[in-house]
Amino acid sequence: MRQFMRQFEDETDAAEQNVKKLEEELKQKYIRAKKLNAGDKEADQFRKAIDDKKDPIYTQDERDTLKQARLALRRASESALRFRPVAYSVSDVTPPHVPSLPDTFVLAGGDLGNKGEKVEPGFPECLTGKMQAAEIPFAGGSSGRRRALAEWIAAAKNPLTSRVMVNRIWQHHFGEGLVRTPSDFGRNGDRPTHPELLDWLANQFVEKKWSIKAMHRLMLTSNTYQQSASHPDWIKYSEADPDNRLLWRMNWLRLESEIVRDAILSMSGRLSLEPGGPGMFFDVPPDVADGFEFFKWFPSDEQQQRRRTIYAFQRRSVMMPMMEVFDGANMSESCSRRGVTTVAPQAFTLLNGQVTTSQAPHFAARVVELAGSDRDRQIDTAFAITLSRKPTAEELEKARGLLANAPALDGITRLGKVLFNLNEFIYLE
Image (cartoon, rainbow, N blue to C red; front, side, top):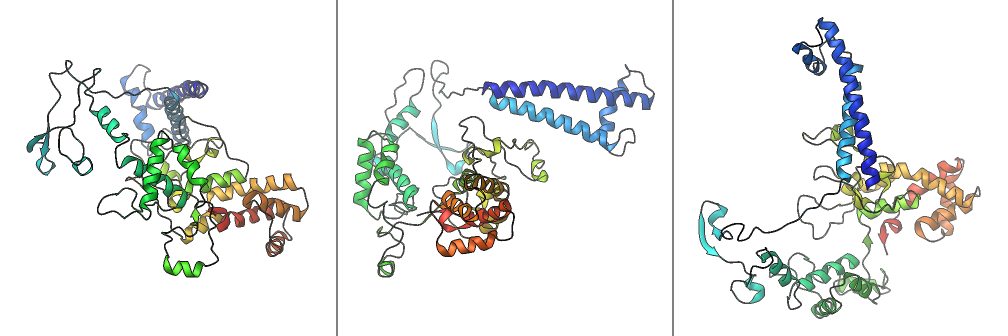
């Protein structure tokens, strides 16, 4: 991190000197055009002349050069700030620093000026079975309210926390939770399909010291997870249980949008596994980059943009295109589970999108490097990289037709786009 911070600080100093040099040259031109002296106050009006595109003193090239120099300065200075270490802390201000903690009141209609009855910190009666204020003694310069809440949430006797967590982990691996409303375990939520299993998993979670890794291992090594997505009696079972609530087969799970992008980068051999640090900014159209009043979107360099998608910087109004098409999380609200849609833009994105278009040639180069010039070996290698298997006889014939009369790299590039579009590539079976 220090290396990048120093790099951008040096770039900031160089860009600042460049801007000052250009502004001084433009100022001198303004002085000559207006026949002023260097010390005249009117000489500082040269900036207004630069901003006025109709002013004949400056050419459009001069204005563009200064604009680009200022953008380079802003980009370098903002990048340097992102790599400077910053520590945040949270604490309560408690006596004797203030006379007393502020009282809390029920606000009628949510109006701060319309206070109702006074209330004390406590826990939901529907979960605890009783209505009484929590015992929260002052300790260590803090009111202790946050700690009391955290200890209650993580208490072994809490009936909800462990169940909610194991249900989320189950949902991640099976596509659906044992409770299919992961954010609602109340009366309006769905009933668990396997309540005894949910209770057992929750107890295991607590006994294994709240280890998420242990729960992953437990679920992934289970017979339920290792089932096939198909079943010899699928017609019979699908009529009795079309939603697979009884887990008679494994669900087809489409890869999340981030993993689809990472998988394509991995197949091309271009995925950067650089860990940690500030996120990267992906390419956006110029009108989007300039569309923020207080924020300028500066795309990261090509190397940074090859990092895992988890490091992609995104705003509510600017999502990575591939993530938006493949049902990325809604950034305007809490997302307990993502939707899974099948729409035409997904196929177009995998055929002609920026990620596929940029990575397919690198995939082709990797295949040719590994397989040499033999077409059949190239096809076998392409299938092995993307699908971890050899092509069937029918697939081999179709691939040969796709590669026929085409330069090696062009043919494998097209084959790569086809393979990236297969259900077998974007679905976990």
